[in-house]
Image (cartoon, rainbow, N blue to C red; front, side, top):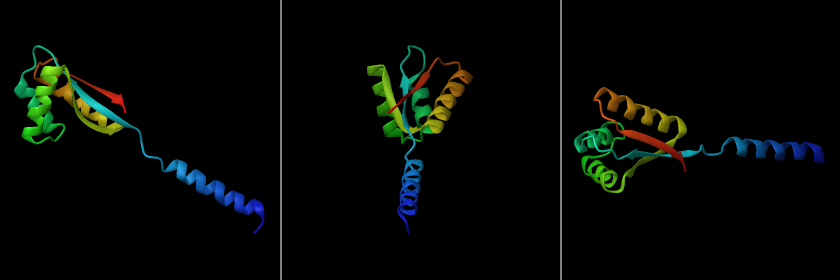
Length: 104
């Protein structure tokens, strides 16, 4: 093989490694408000974020006491879906609960 063929194989390997990069991750947070009930927040954490009851309660208390709480870390598409699901469910129940996502 000549040098050009070897270089091409190396370039292909580098390109495939670049394509295989892990996707960016996003943290999803719930924000405290004065109207959404604690029970509803726990329900959201259990149903949308699939948290066990004890962990859901701990996160809810963190949101209540600190004003914000981490629900999980996900790829962008999943994070966006979870944020939308929280807002949809809160809207149906007429709660002002807000959910945000931030790039990790």
